[in-house]
Length: 145
Image (cartoon, rainbow, N blue to C red; front, side):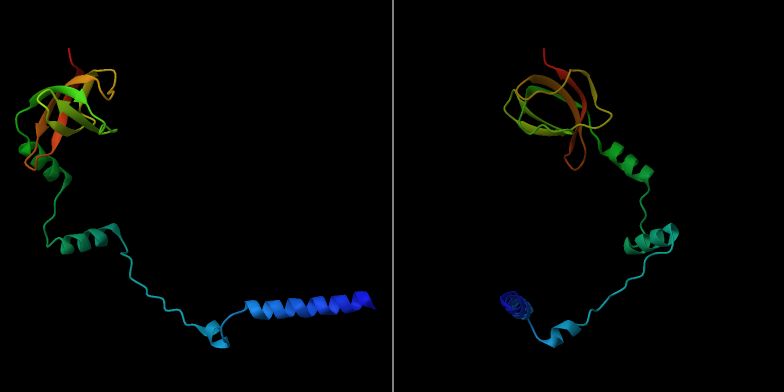
């Protein structure tokens, strides 16, 4: 008898705790969800057409981009200094012997055959070009003599 009573009390407590845990009224369960659908371009040509329309009809090809960046470059400049803490995979911070702090991009065309790697604090000779926007790109990096 005690076991049956304990089971009934336990079932009642579970029911009470379940009721206490459920929150809100029955209207919460009927919340409407609005789905907004936007069309996806059917083809690459359609996407390109939309991009051209958004750009005002001006289309820039890869050859035009590379031609403009090549024509923007000026004469190469060479500096000597120490690699700073701002060095990363494709960026070299060099603190020149004159005290200037330069951030120079390193790309796939940069000649790094004159060095075994860039180590912060070591001295290097860096030849770089500057484009019209002032961005510097390394032409070559070599250990300073």
